[in-house]
Amino acid sequence: MMNEEMKKNGGRRVAMFPGSFDPFTIGHESIVERALPLFDEIVIAIGVNYNKQTLTTAEERLAWIRGIFRDEPRVRVIHYTGLTVDAARECGATYILRGVRMVQDFEYEKNIAETNRALSGIETVLLYTLPEYGHISSTIVRELVKWGHDVSAFLPRNCDPRLIPSTWKLNQ
Ligand code: ADP
Image 1 (cartoon, helix red, strand yellow):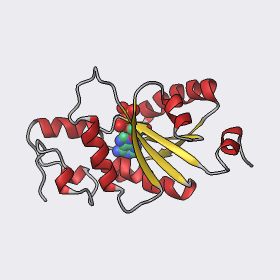
Image 2: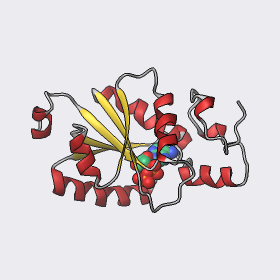
Image 3: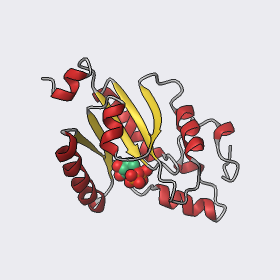
């Protein structure tokens, strides 16, 4: 059965995966890969907050994530400012995709999902992280980068080394 948003979208199931992705980790990649069988298209949407200090610029993140999914035509990467539901509507998404690692994530996601549904009718689909990625977060990767550690074990394997910001230390 189609929901109202899907009818407007020619019946295509499009999910938007919003996040800061600073940086995009192997945990994020796994959520996208596991969600691909559920949707026709996944739009990875980098939320940009110009007041927040980030490890990488929005442009670097865009190029970096596009590189990771260069062979997957059903994944699109954009960046946005403003409300997530507005960005979702703009890119034709009828669902929001998020990942859950632990109880804290669950409670946080519940509030956002309820607000987004009340604002727009857009439903949120949550996937639990794979146990082996449960401890991986962008915050930890940023901290390791700050202290000059090799973070390649936390990043998608097929990322294009030419697109990796030069400040990162990687064994590749
Ligand atoms: P935000 O700043 O909006 O939380 P993040 O970039 O930190 O954005 O995360 C985007 C989404 O990916 C969130 O739903 C988050 O819970 C999920 N996520 C982050 N790390 C992992 C991981 N290791 N495994 C599964 N999901 C994850």
